[in-house]
Amino acid sequence: LKSNRNDNEDDPNWTRKHRAEETRVLIEKLSSVKEKFSDADIVILGDFNFLADDDQGPTNLKNGGFIDLNDADEGTTANWGQGYTSAPFDRIFVAKNQPEFTGAKLTVVRAGTSDDEIKAYRRRYSDHYM
Image 1 (cartoon, rainbow, N blue to C red):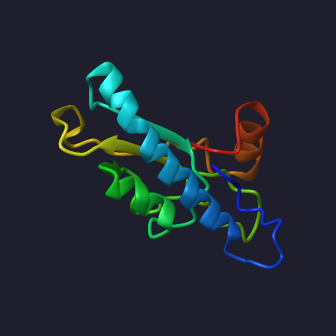
Image 2: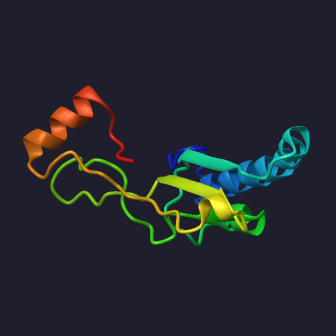
């Protein structure tokens, strides 16, 4: 979803509002997916750019029938250096009341702890862990 880079100087919350609208539209469109496949076992995952579980975006998804497996806001981004706090951007949402997802959880697997290990991971793979 929309990054946290805010190009709208008039509204500091613009990116959060944008992501909220994106999730609202996603939930709206998912009803046709459920209907077409006659299946409610839906998983939504990716880099959502949510800064916290209490953003309107995750709230929309939860109100739309999903469970946020990163509702504890565990950091999923690789360390960019001293003073950097890993952000909880990456999320997995699973459909509520689906036995297949009972006990599902998000585990963040990190590449290492030294600066060299983290830099090598970012260079080779990504700046995100999942």
